[in-house]
Length: 500
Image 1 (tube, helix red, strand yellow):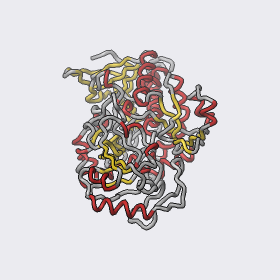
Image 2: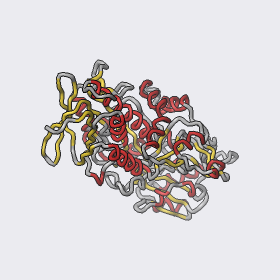
Image 3: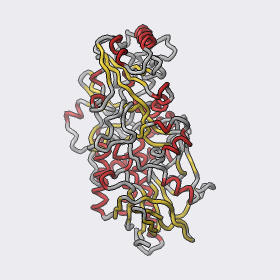
Image 4: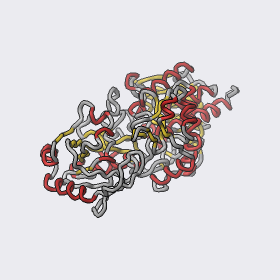
C-alpha cells in the first residue's frame, strides 16, 4: 500500500493537469498518474492545435490573456465578439440539441475565467490567426468563436501545465496504468494500478478520472461506433483505450452520451495508425471548405461549404470513412492555394498536381476519371459567378441545381495549376462516456453521486453528439478539470481537519 494522498488524478492531459493544479491550490496533497512514459506525456491534448473556445467581447478579452498584443495587431484585426448566448446556441445547434444543458452552461459560463486562470498559471496564449481568421483585403476577421490558442499548440499547453504542476508541488508518476477503483465504507478510497507488471494500491480521499476516451481501442471502436471503425487512423495518443471509463462503470457509474459518436476529421490517407507527438497536426486536412471533396466514384458526396470549418470538420471524417475504400480527395485550384494551412505542404503528404484537370485526375489514385471530369464540369457550370468570394464570412457564393449544392465558397475549379490531396478518416476522441453533475461528481444509474469520485475530459459523456464546435474540447476539459480538482480537494479536506 502506497502513501495516502488527499486527491489522486488519473490521466495526464489538459483536463487531468487542470484538476491536479486546482486541487493543489485548494490545499490538497495531489498525485497525478500518467499511463504514458514521460516523453509521451500529455494525452490527446498534446496533439491538438491548442485552441480554446471562450466567451469574449473582442480585443479587451483577448488582451487579458495576450497582454503583449500589439497596437498593430489590434488595428488590423476584427476580433468580433462571442457571447454566452452564441456559444450555447452553437453547442445546441451542432449537437442537434442533444447536449446536456447543465453541462453546456457550465462550460460556457466558466470559459473566459478558466482561460484567464490558465494564463495566470503560466500558459501563454496568442491570437489564432490562420485557422479562425484569414487576411482578406488587408485585414484579419475572426469567425466561429475561437480567438486564442496556447503558444506552441497542444504540446506547448501541456508542457506549461506540467511545469506549473511541478512548481506547485503535484507529485507525478509516469508509466502507471490505473486498472480499478478502491471502494470503502464511505465511497471511493483509492486506485488500483499496475507498473511494469507489478500491482499496487494507492489510497486517496478522493479520485478524479481524466483518462480520455476509447478512440485508441480498436475493439471498442468497432463495438460502439460500428463496422469499419477499426480502420480509422487515431490522430492522437495510443494510450486512450477506455480504462477510465471501464473503471468508473465497474464502480457503478452511469453510462452517458452518444456511444456511437465521435470527433473525426479528414486526415492524411497514409498517415501512421497513431499520432506522432513530434508532428502532431501535420496530417490534418481542414481546407476542404475551399475544395471539392471527391470519392472513388469521382463524385462529390458532401456540401463542403455548409458552414465554417470548425462547425463541420469533426463530423466529416465519418462521412469520408463511409465512402468506397474509406478515402477521398480534396481538389483545389490556384485561386485558393494561399488559404491552405502549412500541414498541406508538410512531409509525407499524399498530393498530386496537374496543369489541366485531365492531367490531375490521371494522377489521382483509385478515382473514376470520366465521372470526375463530368463532376467538375457540372460544378463549374452551377457556380454563382456574380457573388464575391470571402473566406471570413459565409459568403453565399454557392452552386445551383446540383444534387448536392455547395452553400458557400464555391469557386469554380478552373485556374491551373490544380492540386488534389488524398484523405481518410482520423478519429480524435469518442463522445460516449460517464455521467457527471455540473460539479463533476460521477453519477450512478439513479443520478446519485458516487462519493469520492469525480471526472473530467473526454470520458465525460453528454456534451457532444454527432458533431462538435472546434476548440470546445480543450475548453470543456479545462473547465471540468478545474472544478473537479476543487471539489475533490474540498471533499477530501472537509473530513481531515484541514482548511481549504
